[in-house]
Length: 434
Image (tube, helix red, strand yellow):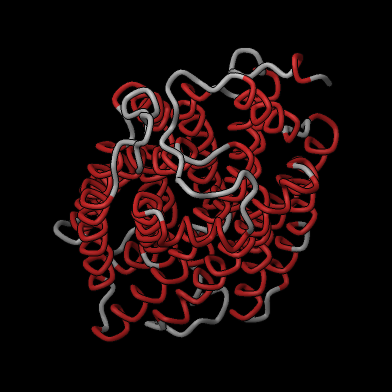
């Protein structure tokens, strides 16, 4: 393929965009199959003692720590061997997961299976995101990220509901085994047969920027080489650029919400008397609203910018979490989950789009990988924090307040330290420094 033949745009690459959207939905299925049945039946099916909030959160801690590292690895690795190979490796790693859950004699096996799930998610979800950013236009980044996260988190929600029904029909272990193996094998076949490597598009974009810089020049960080080292990119994303630091810390804290929904929300609902299918639908409401709204919120940020959707999203999501413990009943919990999901939809694609706005294409994969490292480390830190909060008080409600307050504080930091990153709305000027 020549550089001239590598056109960028959703319409121009609709076939590959569609394949990548299918991939990320299957990635969501793989994640979602563990989010309703496993925590809700931790005591009765997998031998976890009642009230063991820290042990219950342990599988989310393991998932977050491993996924965070694999996001970092995937970004660097994909710039060396290509996006498709990293995606394929991620699916191969996932093959033992359903078997391990099916055969699990105790909770330690669930934690081990979740470690492999973290590797799978870090490699595969990172690649679906990076690949679509490679082949779409700068002015489509919000829409691109919205489509990606819509597909992934609708997949998470659908899988949570389907596995709840499968558990009731076939038993928890057999239902997860059948569903999980079908998803992973299908994804692996589709990757090998139909997915193209998009690294050539990223290289062509770099060459095009050299030949003819864009009219609205992004506010790239100053003082870095064209190909910075891993240490330089990590420092830039983590503390040296205040905008990227603000985005990274917001990404980390927003994962507290997902850790809560995964580890304790199903348990909280069961203790309040909800049935397994009710738990699936209530937790699914969070996922459906989060996923579905991103079709709108990602595109919205292409027009109004990333700053306000990100800041308001943090605060709205935190409010939804607090609402859960301020009322009772399936309808109230569903509405609260929907509010949290809408807040997440405002911020989730647009934090990633903001990173893509102000990082050059030559090392954008690494930057996104490091952002995703910090973001998904939030699973581990958040699960540990909410587990401690619940354990110390003996009540799951404390975990909800811990997460809600964290979201409000983090949103304040984002408001204070960040800025608009959309190159059309806040372009760099000669001599300007970020």
